[in-house]
Image (cartoon, rainbow, N blue to C red):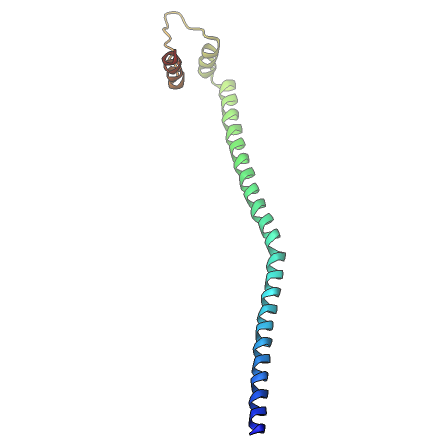
Length: 121
C-alpha cells in the first residue's frame, strides 16, 4: 500500500511539473513574440507615416504641375492670341472699346457678406 501511494504521489508531482513546464514554455513563447512585435512596430509606424507624407507630397506636386500647365497655357495664349491678350488687358485695366457696355457682377460671397453685415446693425 505504501508503494502504490508513493507511485501515485510521484506521478502526481510529475504531472504538476509537466504542467508548470508547459505554462513556462507558453509564457516564454509569448515573451519572445512580444519582443519581436515590439521590435517591428516602431519601424512599421514610421513606414506608414512616411507613406502618408509621400502621398501628401505627391498631391502637392500634382497640384503644382496643374498650376504650371495652366499658367504655361495662359502665357502661350498671351504670346500668340491677340484677341485673348486684348480681352485680358481690358479686363485688368478696366478699359472698354468704343460703344461697348460692361456689366460687372459681384461674387455671391461678397453679396452674402454685405447682407450679413447690414443685418448686424
